[in-house]
Length: 231
Image 1 (tube, rainbow, N blue to C red):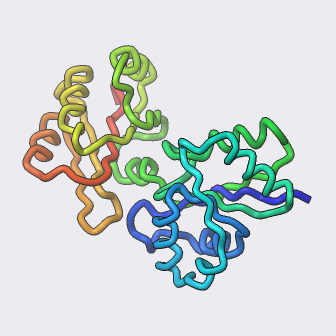
Image 2 (cartoon, rainbow, N blue to C red):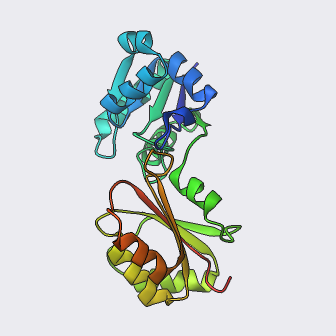
Image 3 (cartoon, one colour):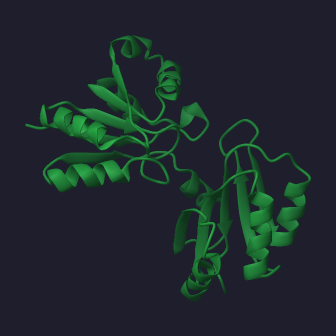
């Protein structure tokens, strides 16, 4: 009987957001696949799992991992090992490594058991507090650098809100791009360093939010939600 690959969500900032189930899975797993083993060790230490760290085999797995690493993971699962995949923060596969591994494993052996362990997600957290109509929404990951007009035109026809991740170095410029394509009356929500000690939230028409953010130091991780066209 083969093992199970658990896709484990971890906190996006506040370490108290880890779930009880995630702690159990990480404790019981034979091997943890970590985007950055140093970050994962800190997470385990925060949950008083130091003994587990000393006896646990951590394997690095990230977006640049080779096919040979995927084959190694497949072999471990076929041997009956239970593996837990984590990224540095949030849910694996949501703009983080994960889906390409699941696709590879299932393409080789459709019987492999892959189980989600839900938890924190930056985009879902932003949607929950933005105050916009997000019954329908589109998640874009990171905005493409090219062919944005075509993408924005498609979004307008769908009449839906949309969200994406952005760099603090580009956020002001991106707000300008959004204003150019959607107009000054369009409302946006920007979450910076969500769940962390210095978290900030901005909400309003694009020029208003842009002005507020220009007065602040832009550091850390940023999530943007744009209110649905015509809503």
